[in-house]
Length: 381
Image: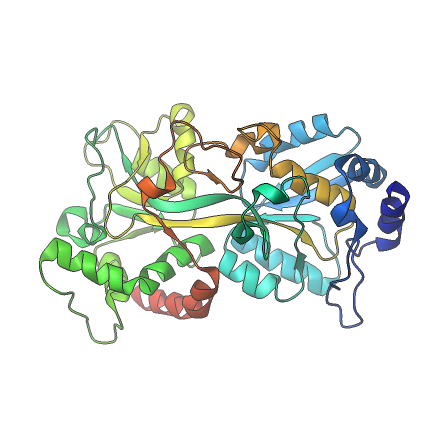
């Protein structure tokens, strides 16, 4: 088997270990690397020397030392790059025939699955070691090692009794004019997915409006549903748009504020409260939902130059056999990230996904109207 694996690595060259059809699309022919043991992958990976990864989270830097300690002889070269930029780079590099990443770790599933995956730029690898503990929805069409969030957060120092928001429509009230902040959906795809989900959940948004106001939502001319009306009202109420999540976190979480804003950001960023002097907390009990939960996807690029090392890294990021996932999963074992493996327990201090109440997105449904929602938001800016 080891000889077969090593032969596959040599023959694959820049082909990621997968035969490629004349049209350039990845073949579905079985790859012996997909069923190789960890020991066999490590041996082959040492011959390759390194593995390069694009990751949508800065936490990938924390993985580097542990990976290289666990698998000596294999250098991990991480690049922290947003999913939006990552998608554009992967497409341009594939067009130019100059790939620079072996593994893509990214969110924005609606674009990843309907664009990159459909275009043959990514291929799935389900580590045999964890396959039995990974539900089908988290192993196909791409593996997800966790669920992340874009959800409403508030300053718990200023609001020790809990979230000041219990209904999304409150964000359109005069009290919150200019005091709601989020990353511009035109800059980061995760936030466009959030806006799109609000439109898809128009029925729930309408019900929440009636729950708060006592009357049905009234649609303005050119507005199709309650989700769009909410977004229009939110923008009109002075929604503050910024370029990155750190700006949201600092604005919402900074201590010493009498009337801090609330904002949509990643629940898992609460892990930085102590280091940054923040008081971020996730809003729960918000009607109809405080935000979205979405998969963090792992894929091997079609033209990976280090296919054995790429699989070794994907396996490592899925965590070890311990209840916490061990060193490979440690950076993601925090409140606000939800393990996809059934044998990894959530952190004790975490609010459960059910308690949080975030919508779990349907990537295909989001992809279908995502561009239309983006165009609608442009009219509001």
